[in-house]
Image (cartoon, rainbow, N blue to C red):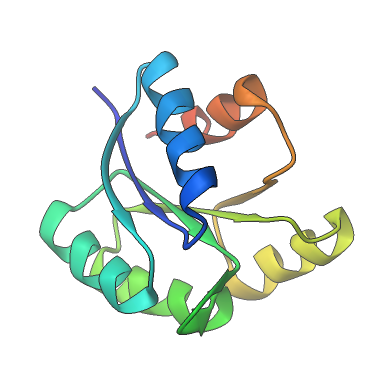
Length: 119
């Protein structure tokens, strides 16, 4: 089963995301609420996809994405945020994330974005 690590400090979104992933056949192997937890869990679990919130309490995606790339170079990175679309696109381009999606989408769009990153 494909697997994903979610890095997001919004607990309500993370619970919803976990349900959506289960319903579309993806295993959520962990939930990090900070950048430090994200790097540690990525090293431990080696997820296929890491879903990274643009702003965590201890780092932005600009700081976290390079750390995750170094720690787990085979993981694909999906940037999520509630930023307006143009700002999210710019953030994804700056961080060189493999993809990006708004938190405002529904289950089918989120599942499609995650599935698109599996190798």
